[in-house]
Image 1 (cartoon, rainbow, N blue to C red):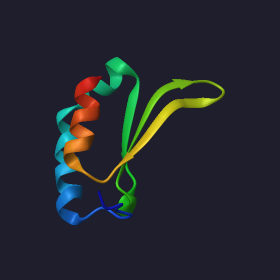
Image 2: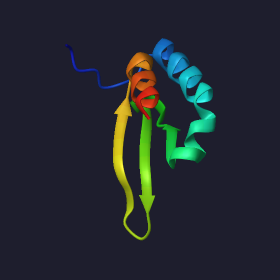
Image 3: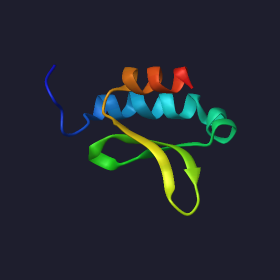
Length: 72
């Protein structure tokens, strides 16, 4: 699989739809999904003060983002 550095506009639209569809999940599971511009979408999980988030992942593919959120 070819490594992709930036997200395409088509994948950005798909990721935004996935992000919107899972909006209710974020509060229940302590997850944050942010649009990181041309770098894709970042999923941050399990915030623990004062250290920050325990897990993070960057997505440039809508299907991969969907699968990650679906597992939660």
